[in-house]
Image 1 (cartoon, rainbow over the protein chains, first blue to last red):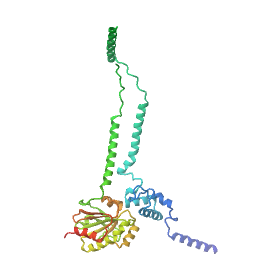
Image 2: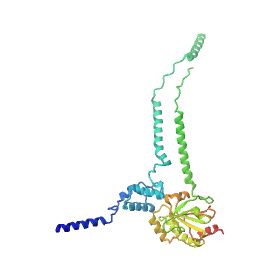
Image 3: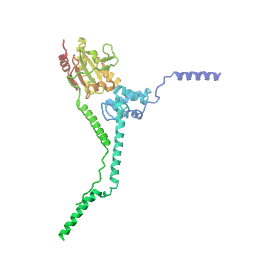
Image 4: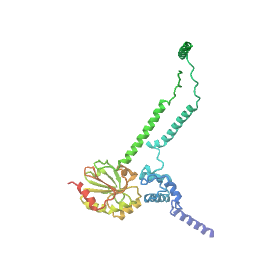
Length: 159
Length: 190
């Protein structure tokens, strides 16, 4: 009989657990969790200041909003998407890889590669041993012969 | 008299030079466009404002509609006020704007639109409630409107005449009800 009552009690308890409201996050999010997302966002009001370190009231409200959304169980991607929809893509520290934004990702490495190529080329041209003086070809030797002949004639005259 | 014979100079290939100059020109153009945009300031009186749509907060709709387009308001004087709940100077003019709305609302010739800039909805609603604001208000989703008007901050107010032409720009808060009414009255035509 005792076993029967224990079973009944267990059933009630488990039913009670099932009907309890399930909170999205048991523990309130820590400042670090909020700042991990906030550091990836920039408020348009305070340009060039990441949201996690921005002291303005607008940014404080945004951080509170991130905390609220974490409590509601939203993921980092969902929270960022919410901010983009409400405040535009420019709030993202890392612009989305679409349209002209690709320039941000493509141009710097391209410029670095081009610079490296030019640098290597220039360094190689500096370190390459200079070519020996060109041999006097037939055309040159003719001019030289004429010059030597004139020189010898003048020396003879002086004697 | 000896002739020195210089070694042929090996320059950079032409295609690389073209690529470098193209890059530099492109960067200059991008920087130039950015600088021009920064120095342009807000839209100026005389400009025709292109059509836009504003999604309104629940409880702050216009004629029962939750979205409002500029084209819906043709023939009316439109007062567009950019504000935010975190903006202290906005509070200086909030009551005056509401008073002005109460003056003009019955005639139907003037529409006030509040555009909530970079704000969170709970704080925005608390602000609207605090100042008893009842005219249509909505968030600047994606900061599209603030970019369209090239606002420099909040508060800023743009008044569009009955022909859809921007007539007045106020940067900063209005200091009195008379300041608002004197501008709006001058734009209302029979």
